[in-house]
Amino acid sequence: MEGEERRSWRKHPLLRRLPVLLLVGLGLWVWKSTEVPERELVWRLEGPGWGEIRTLEFQLKTPEGELLEREVHSLSSATPGSLTLKTEDLASGSYEVWVFARGEEGPSRPPRVERLIVGDEDTHLERGLRVPASR
Image (cartoon, rainbow, N blue to C red; front, side, top):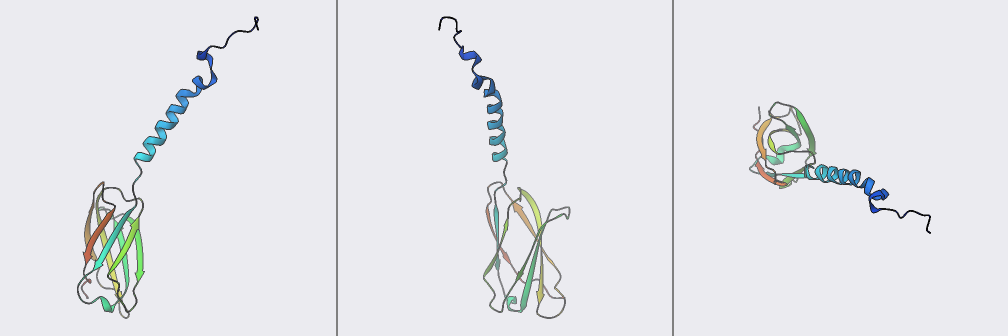
């Protein structure tokens, strides 16, 4: 034991890896803190005329017109009170929701454009929706 050098804490292998581990931990923390929460858009179907509608298409667009999400719902004769759209990558900001309605027969109605403003803390947005006017 006399010929062996005593190891210094300054030469410990973990100490050499500590800066890398700290950077990885910081990177994970920043990555998780910038994650966009899942948002839920609930559309209450208000007013008369929903019994005639069989298909509803929702298109979520940026103000510049870029399509972010599209969802089609088929309705039976018993119209639901509301429809829910779940989005995962919707950041805070303003958007347009284009709603296309189609009855059993004939062409689809002209689209109804709804403005939507999403805040940082908004995870559940509820809005009323009336039947788009027929042509």
